[in-house]
Amino acid sequence: MAELAHNPQQEFWRPPLSAAELAGPAEVCDGCGTEFMVGSRFCHSCGTARATLGQQETSSWDFLSALEFHNIRDGLGLSTASLVAFLVGFGCALFALLAGVIYSEKTLLDWQAVQMFRIQWLLGSISAFVAGVLLKKKVEVKD
Image (cartoon, rainbow, N blue to C red; front, top):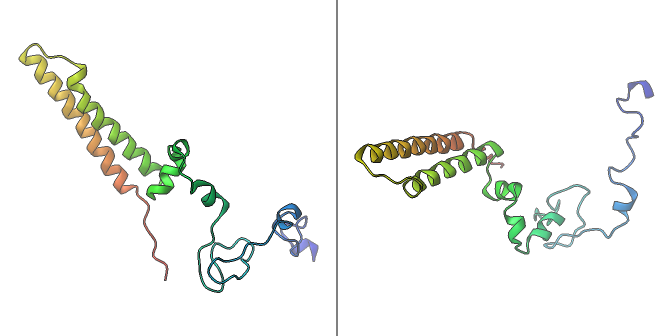
């Protein structure tokens, strides 16, 4: 029978958690008081969402943790590629706005060159925003 098992070192009856993790107090549901199953995200009795340790730690607002990339991505519900495209689009739009401050125009030809420069950055911004929209995760509705 051992030759049929894919991973004979890990026996099927052993718990997926270590003994140190199992030794802690059992978590109970805030809604009904039922003990959560191992690894579950929701209560099997009433369906209340389980508050994980990561959510409890970030409930106190910390400015530096709010600026972390994965927190922004998860907070907005975007994929990594979509968030990067939105950040690139925002940077391009910001640079197009700052082009008038950075470059000074003395002649009509200089002014036209700066306007063309702004147009190029705004087109880059628009294409990055469109890419961000196209790369956005689809929201799955579960019944």
